Length: 189
Image 1 (cartoon, one colour):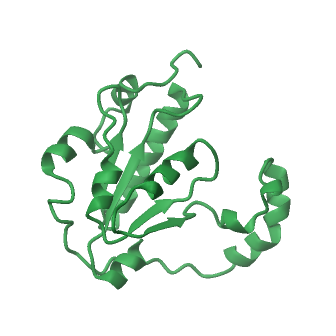
Image 2 (image 1 turned 90 degrees about the horizontal axis):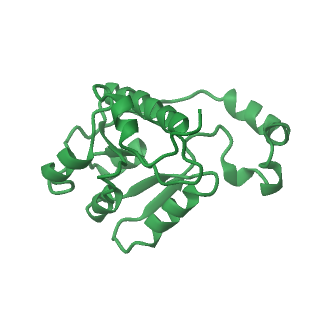
């Protein structure tokens, strides 16, 4: 995303969306997701990136990603590895906006497209199938990208009222309070 923003000479805005509507959503898993999103938001901000976090709750399930995509030059979305998260990405890709959508695997050393589906059902099978690819990639040097465009995204992309109503600063937020407002299963320890 940083390389693309630099090439296009446009500002970069990152939206972290923590959903609460997925099968078997438990409070424990949701807290784990919130803690991870907090760490990512802090890390990206330390790198000088504009980062918004949207946490779904009983009173807020805005489709901010669609609103932002309307004014974007390019939409970069994480490639989810499995159901039910594939549905969200597929839904995004079906909306008619002018920006191209790039689907990228940001979490894996080995892009999922290189792994046969038959090797993805068990961790030990996946590990055996990707051992050589992993060794080849881990040995390569990592060149972190710096954002060249320091401009802020246009205020029209996300009106302040929408941002204030649907986004949260996870660094200062009470994660337990955010969790209480979600629609997840609290009965699972």
